[in-house]
Length: 541
Ligand SMILES: Nc1ncnc2c1ncn2[C@@H]1O[C@H](COP(=O)(O)OP(=O)(O)OP(=O)(O)O)[C@@H](O)[C@H]1O
Image (cartoon, rainbow, N blue to C red; front, side, top):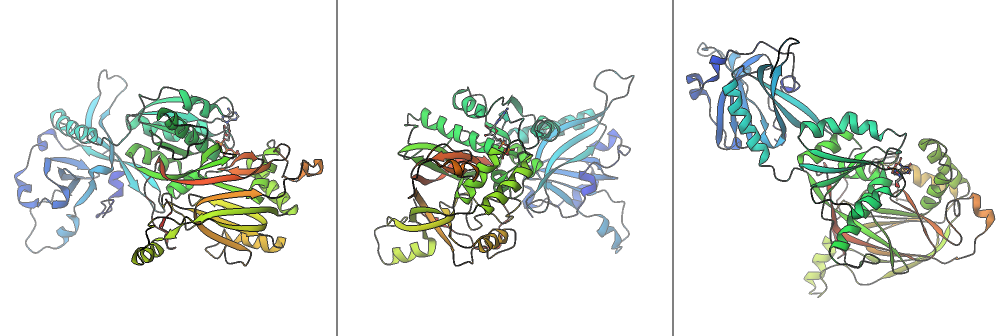
């Protein structure tokens, strides 16, 4: 049982009302439980035994290497009385779910010094439904200073052994994200948990667009175990880009067009506080601030695939997803109307881009990936190539939208993701193409993202699993002032085409080359509960 709740004693964990503590004399080992305790192999070697009050009951408590277990102490039971068995249920938490320990004291107004010791409080990370995590506490009440001191030191020792957990973090906070609430989100929900976990932080509040990039590219990061970004997709992607640029420079690689980039050195944490939180949502399965914070505290790290976006041989940026055509135009229109509220401008931009819907004349070349099944067949045939295909495929035509996604891109309008069969690190990207069709048909396709499935079951939609893509607009017509209002040139300069790369507007005048680099960055996040759709494992590289 991964989260260790057999008895379901959540009330004890959530720190019910303070009860009278057991007397200090009860702290020593008791003859009573030598017969009762059958240490389970699952709990590991026993480190400590003692008596604490937990919730309303005085309990026998055993700290093992892997679990903390307890039972209410029972009076002598009449032989054959089964009702006692029910009450005597063992409960436990796994040691790996504890993230902090404090001595619990009561302070009165007149009292000076340390206050009156009540016991020990454990801070625990619990799993809620739908990938959510929550923090909780478990009070172990005992008035004996000596007894608590031994247990407190043992818990501290255990916590010090979790070397994967960060001790010091660089925090980048965008105060302008969404409705400017990132600062409040951080100081009300994130910082208190980091403080309880004893993590040192150094916070920079960004002052202008691109500040995170400028800072993270060059600042001293030696003293930090990770970087945390509080904001939306623009901020998160900017921070990832900066950490990867920094890694290339440190490795002595050309940052202008890295062919085989090296991974980022520090893990990145994403606290969702933006108007779009696709990255954090895809990472955690839910855009939930406390969940994101607890993954950071627990040191849960996932390697994640990253793409390079280049044009004319120069790196535009590192990123996770891109849209060209309708997706790019919509973002360009939204950016042009920044004075509106985030939701207003998003709805306005979608409506306007739909009203002016028109296809881009493009050539799209891609390197398909071979599925695990296909790879096995190739091996069986004795093919010397064991990895991805080396055969570029090319399609041409009028395309309403082109999406290239290395991660599932979960969001409120697409709860299963814009690319539902892609995983964070399955070594492939989804290439989803909507060819020209009528507006009602295209709208039907978009609306299906909100439902459970079939968003790709349209004759004009094609999906591919790829390792590399090149998108070349064939109509490189000059700037048309009449276009100024339609999104194509709404925020882009002459002859350029708007691209939506992780929610950031990029301009490209010619071919854009997108290449997948497996597991190039570590992001703080746990593995998600698997969804029912079939997982795609591919071998592109
Ligand atoms: N102080 C600042 N003033 C203006 N822009 C900033 C500031 N700090 C950061 N930015 C920029 O804001 C952009 C968008 O931020 P972010 O993604 O965090 O918020 P958001 O609400 O999701 O944004 P959007 O509405 O664009 O999706 C980032 O590209 C970042 O460079």
